[in-house]
Amino acid sequence: MNTDIHTQIPSARSISGEGWAAIIGAVGSAFLLAKKLLSPKPAHKPELVTRSDFYAEMLATRERINATHLAILEKLDANHRELLAALERQVVRINSLEAGLARVDERTRM
Image (cartoon, rainbow, N blue to C red):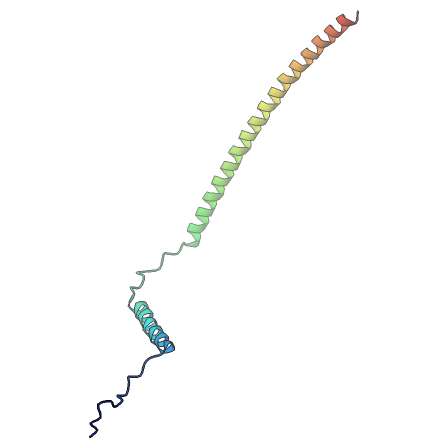
């Protein structure tokens, strides 16, 4: 028996930084695996659209687009007619102003 007070006691082995990283990685992986396995599954997949329903909706959408397109064309046509009418009124005004200016010019020449 050794009665020396200053004998060296073997120290506990310390874990390096790489060891801690490996431990944390293993615990994190185990946590993610448990989360994936224990998470609730979706109740059911969404219902698929039948081909006839799809074609019916596609035709309805096509009709709405065509109706909108025709409405826009009618509106553009109405705006075009309105602009042509306004332009014709301006032409009449300009012609009357030119005629009046020509009369004034004739009077000033004499």
